[in-house]
Picture 1 (cartoon, rainbow, N blue to C red):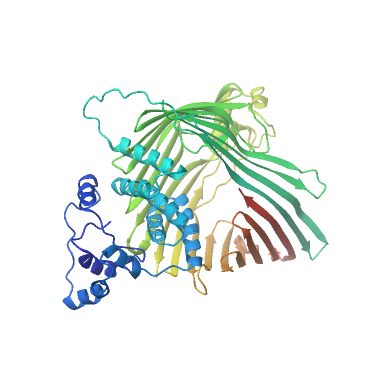
Picture 2: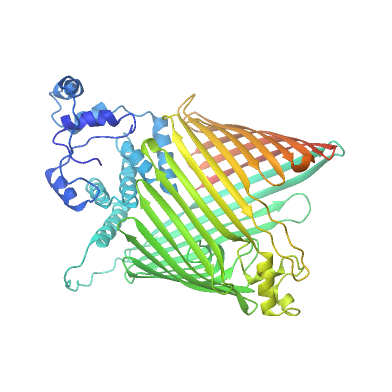
Length: 626
């Protein structure tokens, strides 16, 4: 919000000046009570009436003439709604889809624009959802006073139903987090627990057939892949005003038709989660993923959280790392750790600090301390992670990723990534040894020798990235990135030879993206990539387009890619051409059919020996969301 204006007449000139940069900006009438409350509660809104830039009397007359001449509509807000053009149905559906995407990606500024616009569509259901999403987006964006107002507006418009209960809980949590206890509160009376449970079941089921065959100029064809992929994502949730119980299963089965007996069952997620809101305790047990608190990835185990303070959450974690989603529980390694989530402070800062210890075959595999910092601001944000192994006395990971946001949605992003490759653990000692476990090596070498071998097998990776996005207008934007990477050598020891690293390798990319060029909702992406590496120079050019038809029921997606590779020291080159075509058809809201087919031609020369290959692929199936 820019602030408050004395009248709609003084606000409209500012709206007109901003319309080109902010097409979803709007003016609304507020009560004196709301204005006074917002001025005192929000640090992000000016405490005085916004000054209006100078404007001629003739311009004011032109802008306000429709309002002044509409005698039958005395309410300025109604006049404003009549001024706003009605959106076509295709545009409404596009905004609904885009809103979900930007909410999940964390682009809350864009989400606020979208849901503000959706508040004025004819469909009551969409308006109700938009009102809730708008409040949530403002809360996540740190605009707590505005979020409170939007939550209260939702409850006044939709006082009953599941949404009202959900919004009431969010509003209560918002008020609790903002409140500063200045005196001892009286002990509240015990309230009766509502044992009425609400149950939700949702997820998706999909089946896709994947076929790939290639040919050479020397021999016949080879079937590289012929499989049926069946996947299920199933979620349950049961809750009342105290307990919130959830479970999730994500897995699948691949049936191989080539007769090579490569059928595979995958379980990537299978957990049960419970929260007791009365005692601020939560827990999760099963196969799960976690990327914070020192946990590297997926594991089989448990996570326990206790909110000891509105800004302090303590987490205990323990389990067995998962090397492959096709395997069962592997108990040769286990870990345990503790972490603290701290924040949010000053509406901008979140912190995490952790200790983690991992054992393998009764010796220390990894023991690390570290932390994370997150900063959010409308003009920029950053995330930083540090992981230091106190057992091996090595810095395992340092990561910094930051973004700056400018006017017209332009942005600049930078990343520094330093890490051991692979992550340093004692288990790295088995690399190249032809054994499957540390216990096999312990019969020959001491623990200290294995720890030394592990460091010798582990390289250091460095990556630096600078990128940016520039919006020319509502239809065109350009995105570019420059990345420099370097991988260090590894040392020879334990009968294993050294592995040479690389010098600095450079990667350049640029994307020109256009939207709604031919019709509303279409997308065209022209991308150029260049890689300057130790072994080759690579050029890639691709065009990816998408066109919606029949109210977005059909999506047609033609693509084309051209790659050229020149090997170092003149040893040869390679040309690859890959066209493809993808078609999506949405039968109903929950059922989608997908078909993709493509071909590839490859012409390679290596030390004057030329080889030509070609092939095709088919990928087809359906997905049902429930």
